[in-house]
Image (cartoon, rainbow, N blue to C red):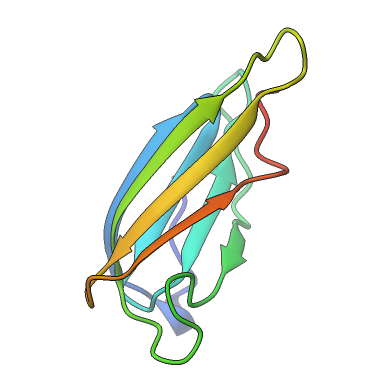
Length: 101
């Protein structure tokens, strides 16, 4: 099981899992990505994006959703992520390295 380093412990506010991607939204406004392998193992060092919804105020992330657009077989699939924050802001962006493995 993954847990944030104790020196920078952040409250988890939401999470979502889809197609081998686990996204965790935290109170510090950061979004963490953990890729889960087919055997269920994963890295304990997640990818971190700081202040996803606003680089100046960094509101806590309260909701996350993932959508796949296109066709995996043809190689045209895109992974779109949307996040909502405590201040009512919404961010939408593509996860370019979050393709199904």
